Length: 113
Image 1 (tube, rainbow, N blue to C red):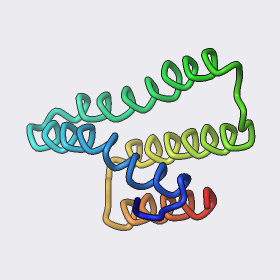
Image 2: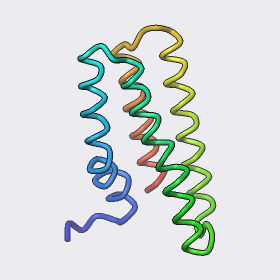
Image 3: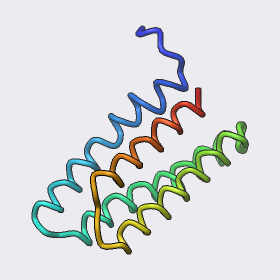
Image 4: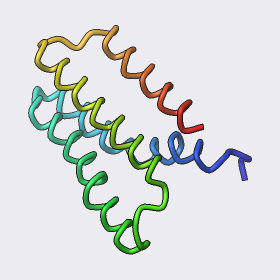
């Protein structure tokens, strides 16, 4: 037992363990010049979890127990997709833009706690 609050562990350690393979395959696709594949890998995995997995969990658990948390998570996910789309449309992924995504994640973790 690490003594971490379950919410904190869920948005940090669990997210890292779940997302590490997606990040690794995305980096490999980018290094190979397969940019469309990298975008599909990231958005496809996230959409699958947000739709199929979350939907099945809600069906089998009898509904969404934490509607506020679900609304927050879906809103942050949608905002992140829009920001990523805007970055792709601009044609440039800079260090500043990457830092903004990291800051957005820190803000999300803070809001969960």
